[in-house]
Length: 162
Image (cartoon, rainbow, N blue to C red; front, side, top):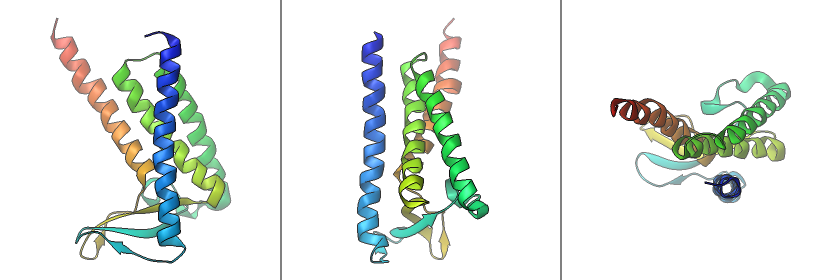
């Protein structure tokens, strides 16, 4: 694939991931956060407003403004590296890298605009709740899973073909 098509693919995937994340967060903010409302979808899924000052699953929430800037800078540096690296690797791993980078950048946008991340997807079983998350977190998770699959399953199958 020529470089121009690669750059277009990279831009499109990043734009799609960040757009889905930000649009869903805008809807969640308007419907949940402003009204402090919980929407019960099923017995195990709710949409609930949760501000996350930390990183994934609420870790490192007590770092304050320094943490916000540190998380953002680290996420931007790693995302830039992932985007740059996606040019040189196979398509499957590149998509994984771009899902991770797009998700990380989506959460950086939250830290810029809100000072914290908008989380709203709440899986629960009675009073036990999985930490709330958003679509950016989901894209990061899916990207990591795709990368692991690509590097450890597909590459092993490819090496067994010899």
